[in-house]
Image 1 (cartoon, rainbow, N blue to C red):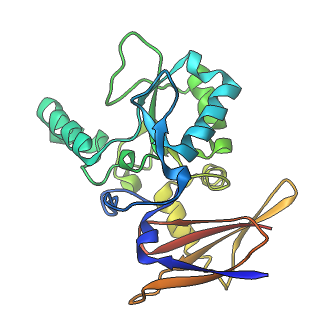
Image 2: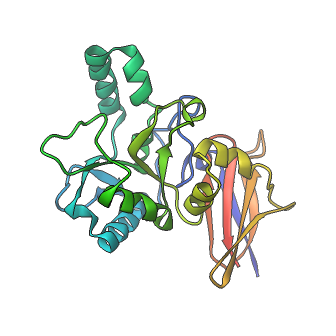
Amino acid sequence: MKRTLSLSREKIHTGSLILVNSKHRYQETLKTSDPLAVLIPINENFPAVKLQRRAVVLLTSLMKEISGWHGITAVSGWRSFQEQEQIWNDTLREQGLSFTKKYVAAPGCSEHQTGLAVDLGQKQKTIDFIRPYFPYSGICQKFRSKAAEYGFIERYPAEKEAITGISHEPWHFRYVGAPHAQIMVRNNLTLEEYISFLEHFPRGERAYKIQSRNQQILISYQKFIPDSAATTLMIDSGLPCSISGNNTDGFIITEWK
């Protein structure tokens, strides 16, 4: 049996796969009724560091598997526009424009405003808020090697600066969900590259297919119809399906068969 979904233009700017960077600003004023998108503290030890509930659940599971909180600290999660603006201005004053543009996203262009990004650091006496130490060894590398299984990616890898617009940040992780994180890591794709890659799989024509255990997963892209109030999708009512906007021009549909 099929059911019809109506996706408004505003929905383009919501979901775990939204692309936020200097060219695609975060739509701060949008509200969502999705209970998984509510901001909550990462845990009781870091009450000021908040993420969307869906990201907290997966981060908690990952940290539990590797006993991560014994050696890793949460440095920064969700930030308001005003906080991001303050960080930008403070860093600009203290470090100059070149450094600031490398390591701090401009207000309105920061993933931290989504509640889907977290900065982590190895536990030390002194933590650098802008560039926390998160090496490719020990418990930090153990986290990194497991991150994709739980829907997280290292968002700003080395040698991808020209694509992301941000310098290499080993400490910054972004929740994009499964199976997208695994696909991105397997193919060495940034979120910018992944969003562009999925445009080659328009819904109704072809889908990107992967096998996960005993399930086939189909991923496709639906462009928002210009000059329309909403885009309509027909999906199987009895099968799991998730839909995320891409924050550019349409939606990513993930279906489990």
